[in-house]
Structures are given as C-alpha cells and as structure tokens.
Image 1 (spheres, helix red, strand yellow):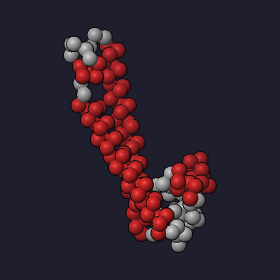
Image 2 (tube, one colour):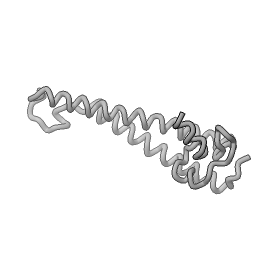
Image 3 (spheres, one colour):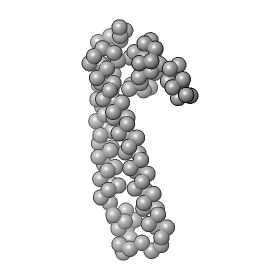
Length: 126
C-alpha cells in the first residue's frame, strides 16, 4: 500500500507531466536540428562543400551525438510514462524489487524512480 497522500501524488504527477512536456519539446527541437540542419546553416559557410574532410567528420559527430541524446531522452520519457501509470494504479513510490516504499528524498530527486536506493545500487552492480 502506498503511503503517499493524495496531495503528494498530485504534486509528483504534476512534476512528471511538466518534465514529460519539456523533454518532448527538447526531443522535437533536437530532431529538427540534427536531421534538417545542413552544413551551410550550421557553420555559416558560403559554400555547401566542406573545405576539409575533418569538417565532414565534425558534422557527422554532431549529428550522432544529438541522436544519442535523443535516444537517452526517449528512454527517460518511457520511464516518466511508466511512473504516471504507477500513480494511476496506486503503486507509485513502491520499490518494484523489494516492495518497500521509496523515500520521498529519492522521488524528489528522481520522480520516475522504480527502485529504492539499495535495490538500484544492486541492479547497477550486477
């Protein structure tokens, strides 16, 4: 049974919804930037041809880096969605591994946490 009050659950839900909206906007912005921005727009070059092979490598690195960030944010968005579902079904704030309540301090820092600190540490180690 969840020990969070309705007001606390409402506050966490609001935080999660705000975080989700912000991440969705960031992902859309990054996607537009990475996939639609050409070299001319990004560097201000007068020519659309790179002067040096390293310029091509830099452009590719920037695009790959941005796509990697988008992927990480996509995972975070899925975690936020799952946390919102847990709020609805009454399991939010309960460790999915051991069943103890996740401390509010952890939920304040990571509102989509699914495990208590102990279980999360064990998961990361092995």
